[in-house]
Length: 225
Image (tube, rainbow, N blue to C red):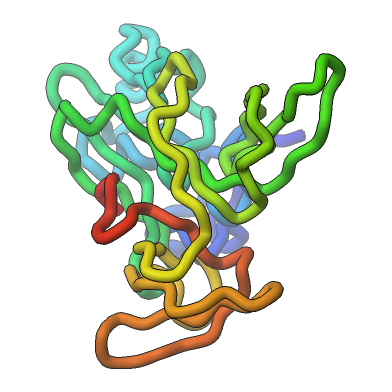
């Protein structure tokens, strides 16, 4: 597979000027779907940390980039929604979406870099009577309790993957929409019926699919999105 990508073929979620750039790096296959992830090199260019490939490689080789608490050694490494990116010495970012569906990275405080919200996308029993949770960012967790449901969110401590808090998909909880016409909006759950979730922002109500909803807090978000 090619390690590069023509600019006209990049996903709509990338903020790349297609008439200015002819080529860009292709993100490695990984935790995030291709249309919802970008390579580390593109983020470094957008933030002004580097202009050339040589400068990008120098930053990566100096071990100045960490994603979810782990050092990144390849500038093609894919980063996406809810990923915590640290760029030495003091830049801390979290992946999110704006209201046009574009992948953006918001600056966060150093104290927020240890926590990450991960949606539960699957669960199954494993030997020993334990439960394996599949999460939105591609990771899997083994847990003792079966109280987690698909659609819930767990707040993880990274990189240890310790569960800090469990946020059920339930009425009154704060959610962030990652798909559909209202992508990028922060709302509250009014009701959950089957595969449909009714949300409100205090003025308007919308109905959306369960797969487009990520719980991020109870009365208010526990992580910045």
